[in-house]
Length: 165
Image 1 (cartoon, rainbow, N blue to C red):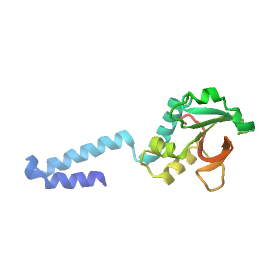
Image 2 (cartoon, helix red, strand yellow):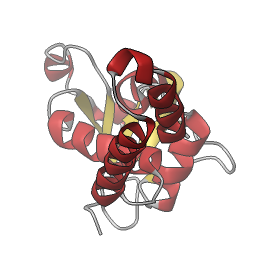
Image 3 (tube, helix red, strand yellow):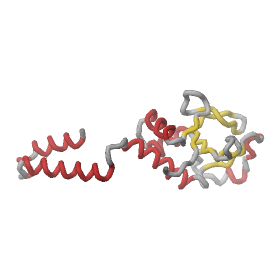
Image 4 (tube, one colour):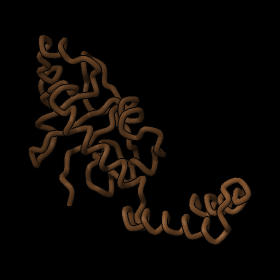
């Protein structure tokens, strides 16, 4: 759709650019072919949300997530460490899964602003679910009540880190 629009604009602007219609069509076709070679025909937004999620966890997994031990009072949060976390993204939860893998309980507003970055929520959640990175703690809900922090049970987007397959 975008390339078709560019093609139409190129054709309409020939009197400004000095190009002939055929040259404009050829340039847009070459751009489209280059784009197709780089990105293929897959869903680009799906790829973006998975890549952004992996990058976010790798970049901030040790600095913006408060360690939390599931099943312990208040998650055994080390309050002296908690005070040093600026711009908290969520909680790194241990002992909640049978496979021993840690979960990243991300504050929904952080997920939307820093991972989705304007992408559609529903398609983003579906892409992460398909990549087996999203954990639905409540059936049919992407954002769930999971852990209690200081006596309050908040809602989080729950993710696990998975390498690219």
